[in-house]
Amino acid sequence: MNAASSPVGARGWWLFAAMALLWGVPYLFIKEAVDSYSPAAVVAGRTLIGALVLLPVAIHRGVLRPALKAWPWVLAFGAIEMAGPFVLLSHAEQTLPSGLTGLLVSTVPLFAAIIAFAGGERAALGRARVIGLAVGFAGVAVIVAGPGLAVGEGAVVAVGEVLLTAVCYAIAPFIVATKLREVPALGSITLSLAAVGLAYLPIALLSPHGVPTVRSTVSLVLLGVLCTAVAFVAFFALIAEVGPARAPLFTYVNPIVAILLGVAILGEDLSVGLLLGFPLVLFGCWLAATGGVRRAPV
Image (cartoon, rainbow, N blue to C red; front, side, top):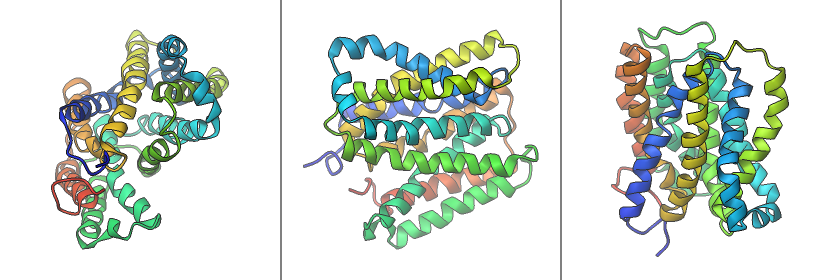
């Protein structure tokens, strides 16, 4: 019995809970960080901090060499999971509320179902899953076009950036499960973070930004340590434990964490469109990912 078809054990549930928190909090930290850092600086900062945290452990365990042997796929994972999404999210959160950003990222299972169908899995889009896709994207439309959403003129572009991030997040677990399965997770993560950080560093140094504040700097450090280094180790462990099909299902809980933190700490408004669209998105994601049954598709 493989990870995708076996019941989720206690370790799997703990990893789900950890990922729900670790990747529910980043939207708050990103919102704070871009207040005085450019999007490129946020990406460079969080990835280099994450790499520096993990590098001593990776060297001690001797896991960098296997990752270097698989460097094309390690870099592909880094590009799809980190380089693109991190800068897209940072740029989008200059316009969008953090809670809304977290909710839009939760559409990952919708795109995962479409990608699976495009890859030849005909069962990925049965009747229930098609209904789920329709409901989920209808929820997104209600949120974006509904009343009470106080965003600027760049809202449409920012929403597109977040949805593109969700597409990338839907693709990345399959690279891990199919191309990096034999590579130590710690080596892949450390090498990916270092490569992305070094690639963005020159852009970050040349990008204009304000005088860094203590609040933005602390948020950036926490983003790098908790939401990048620790979170990716937990993410790889979750993929190994439950498989790539179930792994992204923690995204159902992420938006709840993001919205609550946005309201409680940043004073973000709960718009009418958000309140109406929120349950539609979550229900649509669940239906698209599971087909209406209580466990994720194999």
